[in-house]
Length: 398
Image 1 (tube, one colour):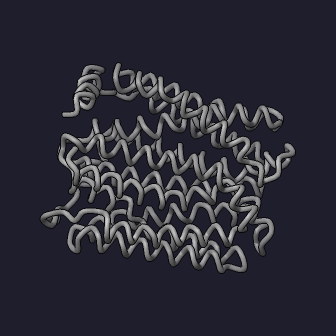
Image 2 (tube, one colour):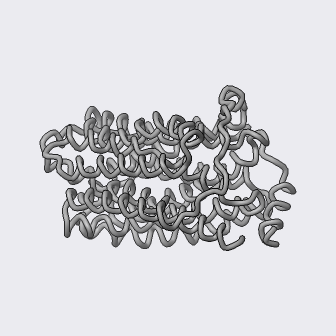
Image 3 (tube, rainbow, N blue to C red):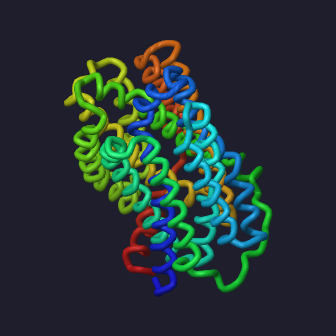
């Protein structure tokens, strides 16, 4: 990478991480906090407050991408960050769950991930783009780990209003990074119509899109229930980091051999199926076994090992399986379906918890994961040699 590519990658990865930190900081504590505000005794509304972010994102990913082709990347990114900051302010000042839902919807309406990805593509060469995307993915994973560990402590110090305020300030800080750190592309990007219909008919991409929907459905549903289980098991919310820190650390260590096997030795499908089985095992275990702290820590480790592997493997498969000129459209659809998974996991997870119990939430998630496993079992992955060759090219720095 040349100096401009390094500067672009590091700065855009920081914006990705700061923005995703805003989403992730809420997950570990919100379902417990919601019980303290008017309307928070309704699990469906709590799920909606978590999931509405994803619905708003799914509605704005594609329009923002098209708009950035006409107006330029940076103006759209700045506008999206301002909308996100406004939503954070509304949520911070909210006196009941309804206004928190409105604030979360505004946060989601600042859906700039696709534009950030497009800008990164504008600022990197084809040969170095894979490295750049990997750095962005690592920054998002790091922000997730930091959020799970820091959120309970920050919540204890500042409350939920303070958390939303921090999230808004991070968005404002990101605007400064866009203006003064991120390079500006030398020439504007020409507008081109994304061939969504062709990508939508691609059988292997459909399997991956269904997979990312289920994966993030389970993630949001999990965080509607698990904080309560930890409290019930005797761990106050301000001490939840004592579970999340070792869980995330161990899960990142356990994912390394899987990623090596998938990328360097071409075992993509095998690794994918094993990771899905980890998700399935965790859902069934959450549903059927007593929620003791040690058992919850073990199940969470299995879940996040599978989750982290899938977060790396599935986008890699999308970029490899998509038709050569249609990778951008494929990722746009993938991100949209991912956001819908956030929304549906929050709404249906909350609805099931309200009308049944947490066992039903996890059994329902397990049913979805079984369907995903069946669909993924018939996937036609690229030959191992293609992945091995790609990995060697990256290793050589080409």
